[in-house]
Amino acid sequence: MEAVNSTMRLAYLDPHPVPGNETESLQILQMVDALGNSGAEVHVIAPHPPQPLTAANILGHELSPRVQFHPLPNLRARWGGPFGSNRIFFWLANRRLNTLTVDALLVRNLKLAARLLRRPAASRIPLFFDTHELFANTFQEENPNPSLRQRFKLRQLRRLERGVYARADGLICTTSHLKEDIDQSYRLSTPALAAPLGYDAHLAAAALGEAALPPNQPPVLLFLGSLHPWKGLSTLLEAMVQVEGALLKIVGGDGARHQVLQQQARALGVAAKIQWVPAIPPAERFRMIRTADICLLPLSHRTIASRYTSPLKLFEYMGMGKPIITADLPSMRLLLSHGTHALLTEAENPTALAAAIQTLLNDPPLARQLATAARQQAKHYSWESRAAGMLTFMAKQMTKANRV
Image (cartoon, rainbow, N blue to C red; front, top):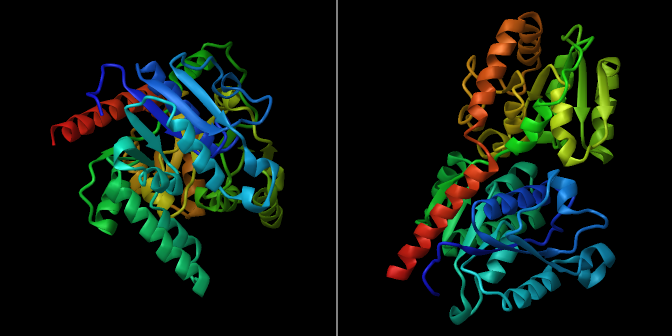
């Protein structure tokens, strides 16, 4: 490979449609936009997005002109059978990659990374894996009493994960704890960068610049995001039993999990205190956050929450200058200090969460103080900051490889 130019040429490959409605697709879109804005030339190889979804629909602004899409057929969305797996996509993506001239690959799908790492040495392109969790750990926690088949799958997953992490030219981890756990689990020497996610500072500034809103009566508590069990929504619903004089808005999510949580709210007798809001377009998130008095991210003790998560919604809460209550977990302590930027409460403790909510409802000066400090702290967590760190890290590793 030729020496790294001042303008790095990247290919970001993923089997999810980009742009798309899934969280992973959203993160990839925001990441490639930031990489383009930071000076890289980015080629996105992914399935064709659902119509009429566009990058501007998701981002709320036009995509960086340095980003180019190479959409492939979305066979999984059309047919089942052999087209229900990603194998054909991997083959098509590899063929498309052969038509491009790029300096490095970015991937966050394990099976796709493993396939790309098997390319012949003559066509080998440096590959950097953007990891957001230890997949084997997550699978093990989701299956605490595994069947024989699940134990076999876990062994396969560990083998696959170790192989990708060992052969990648570099790992980009959402938290330093994830980096530590990869080192401890697999005993590898692969270079790694801890790079938290970020938020769109321009959209936040635009929302903050809109006309002032009248005070909420009653005050509004906000949870915005997916409803995965590890997000701690069950604890939040239990806490609402002890919270008086506030309305909780839960924005996002649908399907079976949504129904389970609604049923729990009715069983607890708090349904009247909760407003369920359907998922909103990503670009509208900041306006929704603006309407809240207190923003919540309860989280659970699950490892993906306690050590690996780098939550977009938290950074967006911070960027909008909102009082925040979140769980007192290692992942959150990397970003926030209790009593300075937010109130951190014991995870999965509804009484402690309710007490923190009542504290901020009863102490507006404290709420304003935390909100101001959180907005200042958010300046360290833009998407462009992450992109700049990644480009520097990748260029350094590629330069080292050229010297060997």
